[in-house]
Length: 350
Image (cartoon, rainbow, N blue to C red; front, side, top):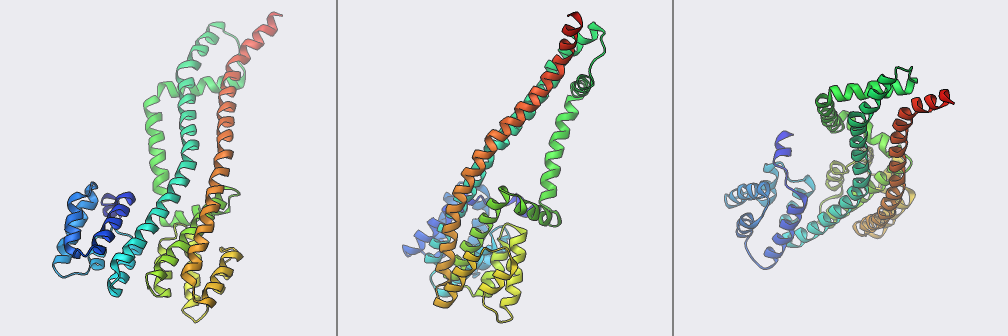
């Protein structure tokens, strides 16, 4: 796991390499020479290191797919499509389709990340503003109230106590926040907790709808691309399950795969999982009946990509005022807690 993280190939660099590789093979250049050329000109250090090793393996007699699998950093989808391209003698065409697939996945990923960037930035700014108020502003009020010698309201005492704690332990607070973020990332990446988190996310009203659409689009696009590459249905479903990106969808695909191996059609098992909407299963059923299943799956992916665009805009519009409202309420609460003693003092004077 650590080896894969440290040697991870950036998706943008992998997409560019795939497109360039397809162009060079289409021009008639040998595989080993194309690999050697691209390994010298790529800007990604990890990709360069892996390509040099893959070139050595291919020159030693290994197939391109075998050399990719040995590095353990390339997705199984990538290795499977390359193997299918080598077996059919259409590696250049398969790499071109693979590049289009990777570009499409990267585009969707950027859209979702852009939708989440603004709320995350607002949340970070909110935390910094609150820490700044508690560290620098509130202590000034606390000194003034101490000189007054008057009994303070409970909420004011709480805020002043919290301010004193943070001001005295600011280093530990920052380290604690950093440790908390690292712990959260560690927990959500564990397989046993990932399943629970995915089930919670997919059940949420708005974010869950976006996550489900993204997972279904990924499923349809991946399976359609694999079938177009000539990979058998059972193998394609197995690879698709491993790249689903959501545990609930992965479980549904594996459950469907078990039924398909017993002789059932693909549409009925997908419908029985309860994850895939009727529109998806109906289009899959039509694709099976007409012999155009890969094309139907890619149409499903295109439809859900459009749905994702609309959902991203909806989430962004909702999150922006919500985060500002939360920040306003917290800051207003701190200020009210500080001004309450002053209101009491003015009332007593009157």
